[in-house]
Length: 351
Image 1 (tube, rainbow, N blue to C red):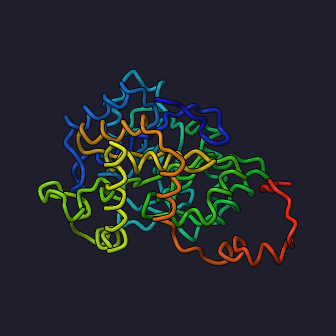
Image 2 (image 1 turned 120 degrees about the vertical axis):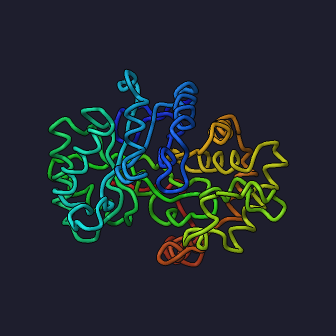
């Protein structure tokens, strides 16, 4: 297992993060405690030290399990959890980015995890109502209190992240050191803004659902064994309908074809592509329901992709560009801006 620095922090984190949303069975997509223990122990044994959970995962069971598993190994871990999503539908203040929910959610998470601090605390999603100043000041207060070391944000537009970080930096508060985004071979929307933002503001990118909920394992391909799909999280519900589209199924089949030619599994290829294609490091958050899935995913660390394979995968899965990026990248606009003689090596500049 290799290690990376997490954005602007000096934290060293493993190249894969263990996602603990599958720790517990309340959501119907997880695993029982004995299997979760095997998964956790195997990840640590492989050299992993970055573990991600949330207060809402399996109604708190995920955090409780981790609290039991960690034991005396707490100092070794880079432990992350999240707040924002509602944990009590009858209480309007049990969700959101505001200070009250932050304080209550954090204290409850620390109790379940049996620790007095978190290495990284995520805003689970932008609530569109809490002032950014309140959110960033409330998070900074928890850093100053010693309950948090670093903070990050998930599921927010790039402009919100940029505005919040700029506000924090200008006021001497703690800025975000990482973003957690939906990113994989069939979902590349973040490429419009986030790679440049992450580079500009020195943030790490972590990717949730790097295998598109299991689609990119190949289990939904036309030639796949029907038994492999039983119990899969995409079998039912709105997420399955959004993911199992004709386009995505074609891309999954193409990924499997290329993986077979390279002698690796489709999941390994999808993870290797994700990790090797950007100048900003991308850390996949891998969730497993059994030990075999974890071992298959971790083996992606040994898959080195030739440049032509990365280019081919980029090409076949390229998303449609939107304005203004489509215009700015066009040959027409570049010629209008710089004429025929263009300087090489232009880069983003902060000042």
